[in-house]
Image (cartoon, rainbow, N blue to C red; front, side):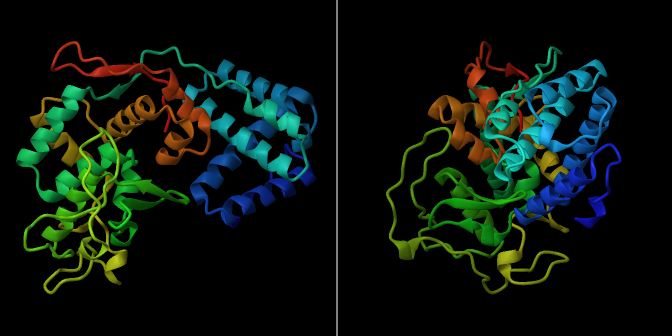
Length: 356
């Protein structure tokens, strides 16, 4: 991360060295360069504000809830968006935790920083969540008109809450049919449950590509897993009858790629790995047939999140499923009500407090 190691003349020499150690810690945890650049930008803004407001170079030993709250208020007065302010608070909380572990700030001060309130948005924007009727119509249309790949994409998005960037980054080796789970890396690895109905769609799409051998009966046997919405469970099959991904005779390597099959993309098009834009077009096509406006992978992510919370009331589990760094973002869903479907063709719209 040397390309983001610029010093700030608004911070003390010790603080500049300390923040570089923080970046090294992020790198060791597998965080991306984009995350490091974002955190450095927020740190530099905090240091510049502190120097102007307090008349002294910024040093993290003085980081406390009052400082963070005043920095947030200064950003609000400058017209910074709620999203920017929320991102800055996320940085401050992460940095404070690291500082507390290193003994730079007291544990009590760190805890108070965690409690600084995220700014509320009062604008009219809303997070769109599909109603049950819309979900039903969307799945009906992709079942009737979509290829195996399109079906697998929509089911995985809806049943796992993955971001579209996480979906297109999946590789064959990330699918474990024996446990019904996906391995997701964004930016650190986590394991996500793949419900049986989505796993079946993925298996069929791989069989269509010649990467998975189908039993003579044509029925794919998979472990029983939960998911959303709750569906009839299947009995756990014999281990030897669970499908495994392998290169079968005649199965083509995706365009422009090389290496072992485990590194091949899970979802491909004519030119290899699908892009986020390609997934968006696939979803829009089937949503149009289902008479659904403004459909996007993020809409499906929020639809999953709201339903998961209402079904489990488990914030920790929700944060883990969505790959969120803290419970703060997941807490937004605890204040939402079930989507209401007053008319068959109308969607539930929920106030925009959900993040991720």
